Image 1 (cartoon, protein in one colour):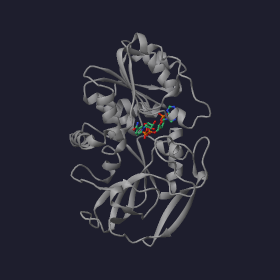
Image 2: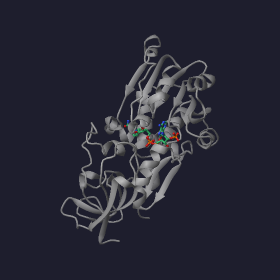
Image 3: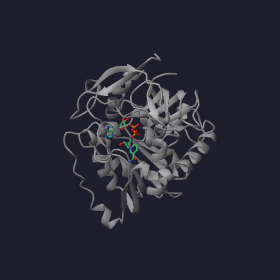
Image 4: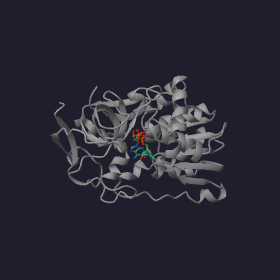
Length: 335
Ligand SMILES: NC(=O)c1ccc[n+]([C@@H]2O[C@H](COP(=O)([O-])OP(=O)(O)OC[C@H]3O[C@@H](n4cnc5c(N)ncnc54)[C@H](OP(=O)(O)O)[C@@H]3O)[C@@H](O)[C@H]2O)c1
């Protein structure tokens, strides 16, 4: 409805998993744009594990979402009215939209999409922030080289799928770790990975990795942390690189897992480096150009997992922590 901006606001801070009980729906009148602002209609909202961190009192690297505030989120929108030079009605933009249907936002929060690179779904998926995370994490942080043996955890997820395919496109041998037989079959049969390990089906993850990487892992792209990171540490090759991208297994855990295998870093001369995708903000165009080229050439695929309706956003956030998504999770707010 054009005259109401539907919103989902943070109601309470979770201690463990987040879900619908921590949010409330609200609506306010649509606000006409002032100079330097645009009124937009949200099409797609990205659902990301970091959102659970933003709900904490002290997220660390960004301010918390205030209680009663609209939940912070990135997404894709269509311009309805604009008082921003260079933005016209019907332009598609990406930006910090929040969980709301018709926000009025300052120009600084919006970026016009280059539709020559891909459509709205491509921009939320294989050209979006999770894909850029995979690109810089694998290339610059992981130092990926042809012939490397690469291990990716969370491999069937948004970042993981792209990281794994970047490995394949750069002639590495790629092993994915994911939860469940269906996700593992997707990795090997649809994405062409060399092997996939169902971590939920083994009580010996170290043995399972060593069975498919007998000469050790050169690059480990870590999306999950905890016991999976520990097992990977035990399986690294000399000179291996570990890109610490995320630690979803620890984000909402009641107790943090203590890493035991860090001593491996000494004898194996490992380089372990964390990163935040925004560190590479100045190189986003380079990353997107490469991803768009791979996409057009048919060498890159990304499965999107789209939920319908703004009201599905809190459920979506919970799904990430229960493995309910395969691929990039997003919510469609409007067509
Ligand atoms: N550093 C950065 O700048 C940056 C940017 C974006 C994202 N990230 C991080 O990258 C990671 C992946 O994000 P994403 O958006 O691509 O999410 P995603 O992988 O699409 O979804 C999350 C997946 O994590 C897995 N998971 C959940 N709980 C787990 C557990 N306890 N142990 C192992 N796996 C678990 C589930 O897959 P299974 O079914 O396979 O368990 C789930 O589907 C997150 O840690 C996120 O915080 C970092």
